[in-house]
Structure formats: C-alpha cells, structure tokens
Image (cartoon, rainbow, N blue to C red; front, side, top):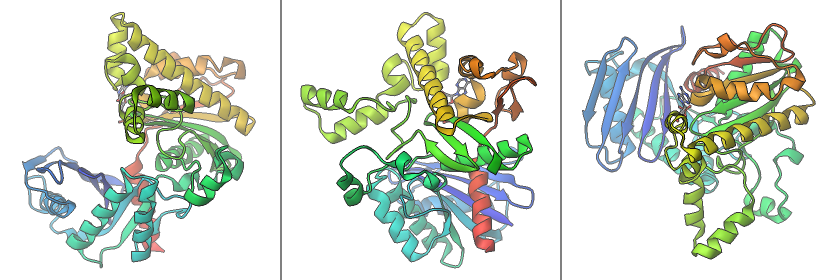
Length: 398
Ligand code: AMP
C-alpha cells in the first residue's frame, strides 16, 4: 500500500510517496513559489531527478505537477496515482478540538479552517492544499489530517494554562498547545523500543532541535509538558525566533519604536533568535564558523541557545521527578555533538555520562551515553513523514 504525504505551506508543498509494505520512501519533492510562478524539484529513491518551472497559480496545479513527476517524468515511480491508497496531511494546529489524527470530512475541514485564527501562517494554507487535493484526486481518495498539536493534548490543565485573566482562555482559547508533536511522539516511541521497556514505565525528554526547536517531557508515553506554547514562538531561542522572554520588553520596544502587533510578530518570529543575536545567519553551521573566527556575537548566540536548552531539560527533569532517557533529534540535535556534550556535562550531577566517540556520530540512531551512565542519551533521527504515513494507514484501516 502506498501513502502520499503532504506538508503544505501557503506558497510551497513538500511531499513524499511512501510504500508501507517496507516503509521505504519511493520519491520525494518540493513545489515552490505557488501563487507566484511555480517550480517543482522531484527525486526518486534510486537517485533519478526531475525538475521543472511550470505555472502554479494555485495548489491544484502544484498537485498536477506532482502527479506528472510521479507517473510520467523521467523520475517516475508509479504508473498511475490510482496506486496511491490515501493522502496524509501535516496540519500545524489542531487546537483543543483534535486529540488525534482523523479522516478529513467536510466537518473536519471546516474545523481546521476555523483554527486558522490560532495558526494564521499555516492552517489556511493546509485548507487550500486539502481543497486542491479534493479537486485533483476526487473525494474517493481518503485524506487524513495528522496534527502537530495532538500529541500534546495530554498536558494537564495546570501545565497548559497561561497565568493571564481566565477570560482570554474562555473567549479565545489562549493556552499552550505545543508543536512538533509528530516528531516528539515518533522519537519517544522509538526511544522506548531502544530501551526495551514499555513506554508507560519511562520518563523521556525529547529535544527536537532544528530551525524550529522544542523540548518535550514525555511521561508514561504521554506528553506532560512541552516548550512551545500558544504558537511555535515560545520556548527557547531558535534560528530566527525569540523563544520565551519578558513580554514587557516587547511593550517597551513597541512604544519606543511605534510598532504594531504585526511588527512585533515579524521581529519575534523572523528577525530574532540565533540570527538576531549573531547578525550572521539563522543556520548554526554558519554561526559556529563565524564564532571560530572570533566573532563575539556569533559565540554569544551559541552560548545563549545552549544555556536555554539546558535549562529546559533541567526543568523537565524536575517536572517529571526524574528522567530515564534524553533524546536529541532535528538538524541540530542530530549533528551538533558539542551542544549534546554541553547539555550532558551539565547534567553530570545526575550521573549522565556520554561516550565522546559515540557522540561524534552524526545523523544516525545511536546511544551516546556510556554503559555506566544513570540516564541513557540517544540520537534518534526524526521522521515526521513516516509518522504521518503510519497514522494515515492506521486511520484508513479502521
Ligand atoms: P532542520 O530544521 O531539522 O532541518 O534543521 C536545520 C538546522 O540544523 C540548520 O539550520 C542548522 O542550523 C542545523 N544543522 C544541520 N547540520 C548541522 C551540523 N552539522 N552542525 C550544527 N548544526 C547543524
């Protein structure tokens, strides 16, 4: 059975076609500049590629280009889209409504649309893509929504509430929802397999560190707390995002510089974080290179991010009254051995010990803690697309 996985933005569309018999990716690709011009780059598992510039006024034309790439191009991997059993969509915001993945019905689609108020950059784009999918593939092809937020739905009330006047929660649903849930769920489940224990008996801290970053406390196989909040801006500093800070710093700057809420959103989401502090780049590799050349602000941004990550890990050990395993994933988590070493060395009081040779490994699943470490530490590459495909298969098999 083949599942088509879609991760749609307002002007882009990432996709993978996965064969669920062996969970192998048959092809993956990206459509860009939807609504402006249009371009597709596509790669089959055997290395064949196809790319083209083709008009994509809407997501419908993008899906048509994908069908061509999959079925007719030089990098085709199937004869017809009829071979695809279902389509799984990544949805950023499921609010308090969606506690798990679901079949996309008219009612579900309307609710995803309504949740656009909580994720204005993402949910409206997902709705456009789903509608375009229906237009291109008809209503017969099942479509499944897999939410970034649903893994976090098990957070207790005292964890997800903000200490604002209660009316804002009642009127607008302002609370912590979290993000990257598909990734935290995937790597924590995988960690339980590697620990050879029932996930119900484990306390795990999962660190998803990429361009966007979040850390989750997973207790008994369920999310207990997570660093991202009402939106994916909360937590600790990321490539271009601030993470948590004193809100009065923002009201102060807004008054001084005569800024609107939209300006503040832009500054906090796109101009801050590693980029804002270093002034070099949002990519940790560029920043590390600049720091090695003696750039103080680059080094400062590295020091700040590491310290903030450490504080979240420490706070979640307190929140769960212990930890059995710590997992690193995402582009930074999987590749940056120095960051992992910094975090683990500062947890030495708990008996965390890592093996320097194993910690030098990049992007591979491995336990990097020593045999006598009191807490196991792993690198587990995340695979959100596979998690979406698995959920899609589970929903259509029901
Ligand atoms: P992701 O969003 O998970 O794809 O992660 C992207 C980020 O991973 C990039 O912006 C880099 O900052 C980071 N990254 C990738 N490779 C490395 C590496 N070798 N060392 C440090 N950071 C890396």
